[in-house]
Length: 436
Figure (cartoon, rainbow, N blue to C red):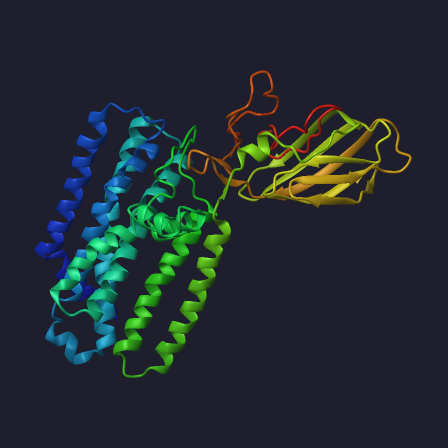
């Protein structure tokens, strides 16, 4: 197999078609940079935010990648290859060589990041994350477009297969949003399917605010996994279609399809929820409470699945229970008071705790909770989240003046204490519980 791949790589790199594809990609990238971005006078918070603006160029990249795969897949194989290797190996060699050569286009976003990193003198961790993010974005586009092109070129043996590059351009980019949201009556299902099929930045029509760098989270890695499995499925399917022995490739295909189903399920599980501003900022479900909080303090360990500890001292004023609010993305692991575990119930975002019998006044409660904060805000971007690098809290949108306690947005560096997202809070008698 290595010899076949090497032969086809030499053929690819010596091809005028591939050279034209590289020059067209580079020319369009530079042209978009000069005309679409630099001439606009826009100032970006960081170069990774600037890179996200190249998402509009990625439509062109999708077409170039698709047509390149079709062109080389349709090329006649060399006689010495045909004579000594089975058809499936020959096709795999072509496909691997084409993918490998095309992935070299990722040098362009890598160079973009490295040049800007040198100009802005960003830290190594920031630069490495940005480099990975930019290369992954282009690699996902190339792998998806070319894997689809291989299968299409195998099934459709006429030059008409090139026309499918337009369909790929719509399906695998943000263009699909208009069609899919319309088909599903503009509900969340259409939005999810749009982001699932698009290989571009999720929610790219939204507005990112106050974000400091590339986010290499599980949501992105789950897409990397299912795209890699999709490519493997195409390889296995072509092996089944053209191989003489069907049993082994069929078993491999079935195993890959099961893994693919698991990766897709993981992606949908990790999909961000929509942040319900009205419910969170203006709660109406909780009744007035007699108990009042004297102080609270806590600590947190930031990651995509963060760990929180919170200690609350309150005056029960004769109350037997007290209700707190906790974000739905966080699960309670333990509630204790005076050294003993306390029973509690939970309904949605409301946690009702039974206070210890005969407890001294004031009562000190300790909470431990953990979970993943990952929301799409009302400006259609994931900017309410927790990660290893920091956490972003909800902005104070729609909050009346003079009533902003605890309703602000911060980015917290890892390892630095700050206000909890979904902090366990309770209002004094007559007040609504503080929102999360």
